[in-house]
Amino acid sequence: MVERKLKIANKNFKSRLIVGTGKYKSFRECANAIKASGADIVTVAVRRVNISDKNKARLMDYINPKKITYLPNTAGCFNAEDAIRTLRLAREIGGWKLVKLEVLGDKKNLFPEMIETLRSTELLTKEGFKVMVYCNDDPLMAKRLENAGAVAIMPLAAPIGSGLGIQNRVNIKIIRSQTKLPLIIDAGIGQASDASIAMELGCDGVLINTAIAKAKNPIQMAEAMKLAVLSGRKSFLSGRINPNLFGSASTTNKGII
Amino acid sequence: MKNKNKIKITVNGKQIQVIPNLSLKNLITKLKIPLNKIAIELNKKIIDKKRISKINLQKDDKIEIVHFIGGG
Figure 1 (cartoon, rainbow over the protein chains, first blue to last red):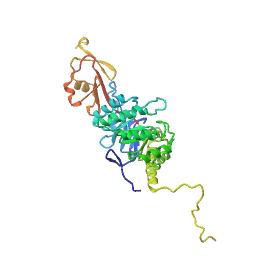
Figure 2: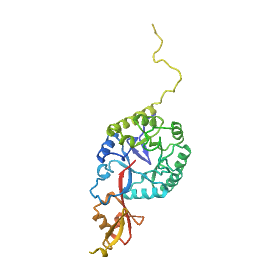
Figure 3: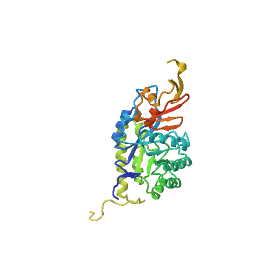
Figure 4: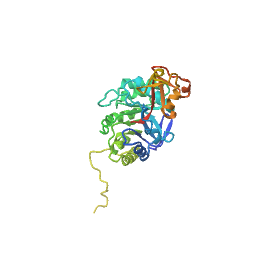
């Protein structure tokens, strides 16, 4: 298979790795990790400005939204109304229409509340948003999100921030087989090999935050993830051999002495 | 101006006192917040940033000023 650029809502992106900007020690470290990751999309959250500390550093001072695509998220929203309010505010900051919808239903495991997620996808799409949707690895719900107008399906590999890696490869493969939309693994990646596996399953991209930000060396891990995504993608495109229970000698017996 | 002439408004959950009819634009300037990096909600309605000089704040107004922070 021939490589094509990642295309989301008719826009091409160079990298198949999307990175989050949360949990870093500083904005500087975050900016350096983004650089090392090669990502051209980063997720960001909408929160109150600290009005008592006017000199506090701002994300936008470190990560230039003219150079890197900001993908506003709805982190911390538990219903459609809150998610829509948040994304309308995000749009107002600077016209962002490409957004990441994340409506949670469970504070412990941070699993998505899929009924509210579906409802939000419908409402946001009607308002002109291009919605990339964090969702369960459920093929039926993924289909419904697609029908509701999602521009990307983003199933979890495992709970957000857990680092457990891809828990249900079969479902990811089923979702892959049923959709032409960009399929991006969002949440649960722990190490570089997890990112490679996601790409080898045929995913179009991977979204990683905690595994990079909380690694002992975030900058190096960002680079490792970049290489893992490239490697996994290349492996997928190259067409792997069929797995076989029995051995097959690499060296011919012809001419054996 | 004495405190009794001031009105109470809430900005980002914090109650503050301002002079009556202070424009939203002047409030943002006073708070030293860069306008191009924020969005504003007044009583749960998003405000077009181009119009903020025309909006005068009233008693008990609730204002939310948000920006982008790090997130996943």
